[in-house]
Image (cartoon, rainbow, N blue to C red; front, side, top):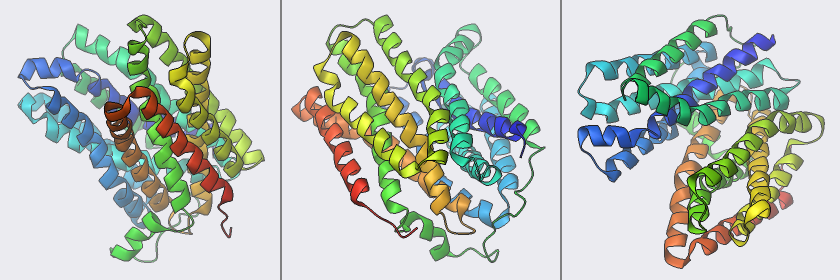
Length: 379
């Protein structure tokens, strides 16, 4: 399968990361315009993730039933139309728009990962690493580009740009074709037990748990490290430089991590990555200066390794005919971890202090690493 298709699928991943974060970072502007408070901002961020939690397993299941590429096209279409719809409705209906965007993103994000795995069976880890780096670029450019768009146009301009990006990528994706031997499920009828099976597959559950812990760490590193930096007197510029170093490390490590997984063992790289990020999270609040920067970079490297190689491993362990369904379940667990991580460390930090929160979450990661190190499957 040509590298062109990998680039297109990476751009598909970019659409969901850009669509999520370009709007999220500019919600304070929206809140001032329509007169809502912090709770509404939180709800608007959460509804996009909530839509993905619920819909990713469903769309993964439908992709295995009806076709992966068709599901991807439908998701991009829904996302683009929902973005354009914001221009025609009362801005106070943004919650509905974000829900529809999230549903569309759930479809094309999970299927794009499954197609990478299907198109590149012999270099799956490296291909997923490149895909995730392209997708992660959306998280990097969205805050700056989104702020620029709002400053030069309006908050509604974000939805125009999101729609344009979605439509362009949809047009590019029309060259994609179903995998040579599409793994469809046996019949076209909806079967609840069949749908739920990947969510509780005993061979996949340990790796789903690792995904949840890894997403805990994502929320901590990029959400609560800034809180720690502020508490020790770092100005926004210095804090931004440190977090940018972590983001760059997270992006750049993923193709290399996938290459290592292809040549050695996805399992071994996941354990190494989880150890690195656990150590980083546990020690960050005891450091300043260059050691602090080094730990942020170490944590980001570990997170990137686990992110890419869990997808690679789950695609290998998925039962025949359930590739999209299994990756959809993994995507749902990712979103759950993304939501629970900030809540967990926030609650512990509120009651026992920020350092205790970091150490407790680092200890959780070490416990998960030990469990995975002792776990064995039959494959």
